[in-house]
Image 1 (cartoon, one colour):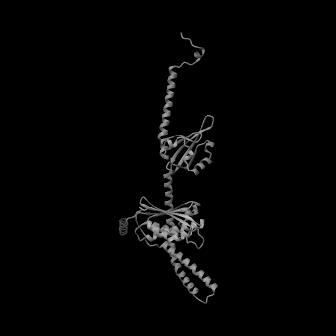
Image 2 (cartoon, one colour):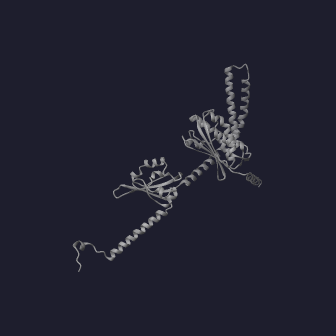
Image 3 (cartoon, helix red, strand yellow):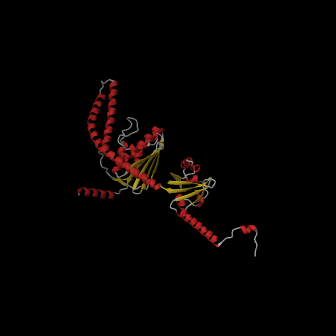
Length: 404
C-alpha cells in the first residue's frame, strides 16, 4: 500500500463530480467570452477602451470604420488625438475620470483624413478592486448626418416663416409706397425750386438742401418698397453665374481696394449655365457684397471676402464668406425682415436683404446665412440648374394648369 505524507493525506482528492463541475464552469466562461467578443467585434456602434494613461488599448471593427483608422493608427494612441483641441479641453474640464461615473454627451471627433464628425459619446470609467482608475470604455455613435438633417429642417422652416412675413408686409408696402410717392415728389420739386433761387438766405438755403436730400432718401425707400412688393417676374435666359459674380465684384472693385478688402475668388470653371434673370441675380450679389464690405470696414477697417461657386447636385451654390464681426443669434432670426438693419440711421433702409431673399425665391432658390458673433459670416445663395428646354416645359405646364 502506497503511503503518503500527512500533507498529502489532508489534500482533497479530485472526484469525477468535481472534475465535471470544473469543466462545466470553464465551458460557461469560454462561452461568455466568445459571446462578449462577438458582441464587441460586431457591434453597430464604435467602442474604444483606454488604459489608466488614456491610451487606446482595444477597439472594435466599427471604430476603425468610423475613424478611418487601422491597428497601426489606434494602438497605444493617446485618446486626446481623436478630438479637436477645444473639444478635448471641454472633456477634460468635466473631470469624468475623477468622478468615476458614466457620462453621456455630444461632442466632435477627428477622422484620419482630418474630417470633423459629430458624435454621441457614452463614457464609462473602469476601476480595479482597489478603487483606482484602470481605464475607460467609450461607446461612440456618428450623428453627423442627423445633425445636418436637423439643421436643414430648421433652415427650411425658418425660410418658410420669413416668406410668410415678407408676403404679408409686401401687400402693405405696395399701397403705402404708392400713397407716399405723390406728396414726396411735390416736396422734392418745391425744394429744388427754392434751392435754385438766388435771393434765398444762405442759412435757409442750407436747410432747404437738407430737406431735398432727405426727400431723396425717402423716395429711395419707397422705390425699394415697390421693388420689394411689386417686383416683376424674372426675365430668364441662359446665364453664367460666374459671369454675374465677376460683374458684381467689378462694381465694388474700387471701394474694396480703398477700404483694404482683399477678395479671394474660387469659382468653379466647369459650372453649368442656368436659366435666370441676370439683373436680378446681380442685384442679389451686389447687396450681399455691399453688406460684407460695410461690416468688415466698420468693424476692422479692412478684411477678406472669399467668394466660392460650386455645383451641389442640381443646384449652383454661391458662398460669400467675410471675416467681419459676425451676426448674433437674435439678429440672424430677423436678418431678412423688411426694414431690419443694424446700421446707423441714414446708412441703410433694411430692405436690401429682404429684396434679395424674395428675388432668390422667384428663382426657386434659397438664401441663408451661417454666422456666429465674432466669427464672420457666410451668405449662401443656391440657384437651381435649369436648362432652356426645362423652362419651356415648366411654362407650358403652368399655362395648361391655369386653363384647366
